[in-house]
Length: 259
Image (cartoon, rainbow, N blue to C red):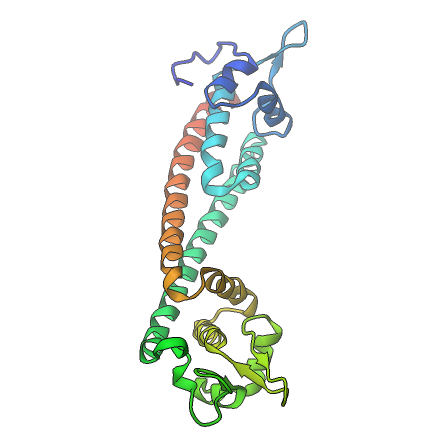
């Protein structure tokens, strides 16, 4: 919807809805949720909106891609209630989350780079775990037990057991001895968990990252996921800029209305 509306021009719900591909019921729902200011009513009870409502809807729609529906709605409610500082705090929290997500991505990429020298030394089915094969290794190529793996990572076996309980590593059990046996994938997960723990990440933060590695089928397929991750973070950043511009325009439009 264009910005050349006069402040006193009356608009119907359908006028606001058309410009954003929304239903008129959605516009009414947004008003009831406090995302839009309360509408005036005709003597017959019909809602009438103005350019101020159109600006609020533009701001909300622009905020959603960067902040999510729930936070965008909370931002608009705060603004409409005159609590601009609360709205700014919500925006700051979204930016802080985006920065934290960027740092997490950097930590994952750094951890994966640290894994590359070890995986490059392995060949065939044992690649990525060959570093630990040898004395004390498991029954198959590229496998190892908890002691040698803990020694290589310079951690205690108890730490590996704690990571197993948290779902970070999944060793299998030898059917004869009951010993934990770490295959290529389990060694990879342990090394990745070790790098991320050194970076200060908590176990509950590491678990979903390792789940992504497993879902990708290894490190190489994860490169495409990392590129997509970069793209999504950049898109969120730009969406936040677009949302900020529309919100600032709405705040400027509210000033004469408040006066």
